[in-house]
Length: 465
Image (tube, helix red, strand yellow):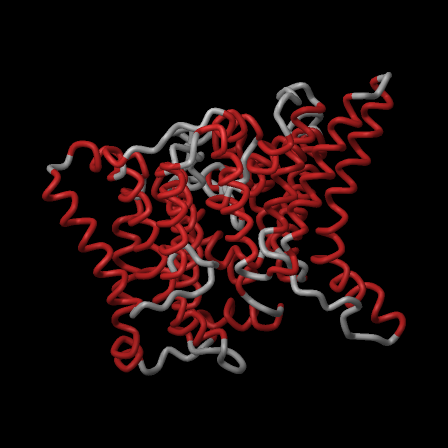
């Protein structure tokens, strides 16, 4: 059930009505029931999985807190975390490790299990990991009921593709849910509309052109290669940030505040800066639960580089069980490490830093070219796309522009407007614009999205992760 699909609008209309009429003390059960229906709509046979993972985390925390010594408490926390990771390893990585690491030695190239990946499994696992670790570290109390913890995991706006929420960001809000009011509905509707336009107008339409390039056999022409590289950078951002905007708008309509997950990442001046702006909740998850426990930037440069490489390699593996994702993670690990090692040199420049426009340009192009491995199904295809702008044919420019004029205009409009892409601006406009101007603008956004998409929407890219 996609946020941008007609069936979801029916679902949310019914849910929103029930949210108003159900007494406050029963609203937590509406979250559980509604989110269960939302999840089961995709594949009902996997509906048990988030329930099982929640049970493991909740009972594991009780078991952990019942330990009589710090050492026993730590062992139980580790056992709980391993148990939480087990389904993710089984469904997402077993076939990859068997096919790529074991298969060559036993003469097999097929999958061992060949099971479809449960929707949102990585996000559910990381959400519950944060719950267990934060309680173990004493950052959050284990005082919430099982039903509230289950609602924290299942809450449908963030269930499938994040944001990845810490327990302190959602559990207290679910325990004391505020009733939504129609008087304030303009703000969440405006945020949702922004996400809808990003998804249907930009991500989907640019994505069609990008897909066509990746479907070509062999190396594409130089112009097609550039379209694939720049187009995918627009597609992935508008797809995922569009999903996040819609999730934030939906939650806000229900009186729940979710954290922003993107902050104009293509305006970042370095890779470290970019990762503090892109998929913020995942970046900070890896920072707090992996990079800093490894030692962060402490203990010398060599260990700092090691910690960066390990973190980014595992980030790549989290995104997908494929060598292309590992290479993508490695590239970012190398890029961040080089940026870190060059800091003393950069500080010796006359200005003490690289000019902002150069930093933005270099950072974006590093991200865009590395993203080729993120998008490509194979290393060979990634290398074809990578090398196309440099050794591919530049012929047929007129016909290329004629065939892709709408896509090229969308890409240009995106980059012209990206620096203004900020939910705070949307909230400000929704509060202070004259009602007739606000509602006319929102109506135009919906009309444009529906007309251009013709009522069809592609699956969100991050549903695969």
